Length: 309
Ligand code: NAP
Ligand code: GLV
Image (cartoon, rainbow, N blue to C red; front, side, top):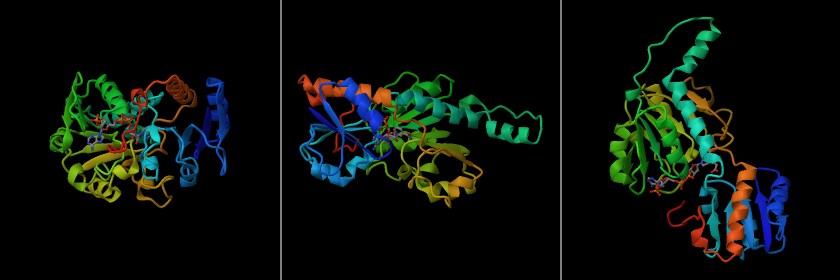
């Protein structure tokens, strides 16, 4: 069995060594133009040439949770896509979002500014019950984040494509449920996959429906948000601020208004990193299952190209 590795964002050598150690019977190699045909591949945003030269691949294992970039490529229908299914990401996402929510709720930014002026001053506590947190997307990451935020006794709402029932979370679904979800939300967290249905979903029309003084946390993809609409609603005072980890163009261009905006916190797409050990262990286990003859449909993280995630 041959496994090609084509990772655009990191040095492949440690990944190849690790995958080889987990699957000693396999031949694991770094892809280069003209490489021999492989059975499986581990990829992150490969060039189209990779797909075109390897049409026989049975499965593309994506070294990340989001497959929006892969689904924009020309991929033969016979090639299955399997994304990371948690692999250590949900705990990172939960800590990032809990940090952003509590930093805003407890006004730690204002205390940082007070310390800079050696100024000892209390701020009036907000009412927790007035800080409902709404999570767009209740998948592997959204559900974990919802449960983590709930631990701090904030009211939590969630929105998904199909209906859900989750203890302690008020669940909404489908287009018909979106307005009700937004109206009930003070802190909006985006954890949706980027698909034609979710692109630009956070725009003036939807963000205006959030409660006055709402806060936006985008940890999914930059294209979920209409940048100009966020800036306008911050400047008009409808929104209190935003924490943004993902952007339409990455790295975020130097001249972009988000960098210097006093109400925006920017991080460089780090809310949930792909962890090598966890990812390789998961992918090796799935390849071993396929080699034993287990059906592709039994693999967690199998992407449905029609749904787009
Ligand atoms: P997932 O398990 O596939 O969950 C996706 C959720 O979104 C599901 O609840 C799904 O609803 C919902 N959804 C999809 N389309 C929808 C629509 N049109 N309307 C309403 N709900 C919709 O994905 P995940 O593993 O949680 O990851 C989510 C995203 O996070 C990834 O796609 C990626 O873009 C992003 N991400 C970012 C980072 C980072 O570092 N910033 C790291 C990892 C992932 P159903 O449950 O009804 O199917
Ligand atoms: C990161 O953004 C991922 O999709 O895993």
